[in-house]
Image 1 (cartoon, helix red, strand yellow):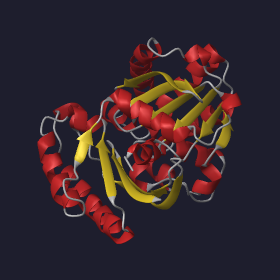
Image 2 (cartoon, one colour; image 1 turned 90 degrees about the horizontal axis):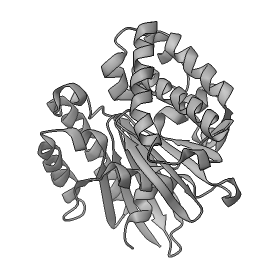
Image 3 (cartoon, one colour; image 1 turned 45 degrees about the vertical axis):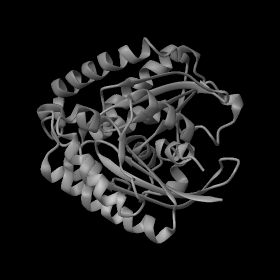
Image 4 (spheres, one colour; image 1 turned 60 degrees about the vertical axis):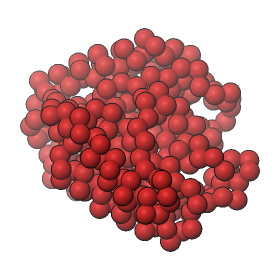
Length: 315
């Protein structure tokens, strides 16, 4: 048994998984953590990280470094995704990660992965507990700056593509009022549809039998659809939401004010202002998968790219 630490730094959040991995590559969770740091703040408009966003990320990563050190983990892999691929000053970010993580494990630092590698890691983490009979699966990792769409089955990935659309990117680009106007919602839907159409042209989603959604937008939507008084990962993990329920929750969120959304028990404070963008992307996905593959429900998994990162660490 080897204890490893996986860190996923996305556009909106930074997450940690400390887990024990056995020789059969089975994971046993030791600790999971999530902080909303909004690293991608303004990157879509400026092309660079804001200094305050790097500082927020440094604070969270320093907390994680202490947890990793205390846990006795012997290997770390940290990956950075959409925002880091786009930022002109990303070396400032990497210098920070080398300083923080290198103090725990010599030579440890963040690495940028491609959208396709992000998709493969998300798939590996998401489908491990599903029945092979439910495949092929279409796994969607809806992040802050990008959305990964992966088709595969128990034998592995058949097709994968990353779209430059996510809850932060779409909110900053299109949803300027609170709640957004009908015109803003329509513009956001059109932009999301155009970005995803390019992805669907490369991934044969018509083959899919089961839609699996991962990451914060999907898990939050599931918790709200289940009317949970507060967020409960055990109740969200592998929950199944009929598409009618998905559309109902998304429509409700888009009509709410910031205060209304913040008052929802399962809503993380760091998602309040971007969940509308995530809801629009989710609705476009739901409509497309229903029309193209006859899918009638969304399966939501708490296991995602973070688990895939942990599984990818050499033992």
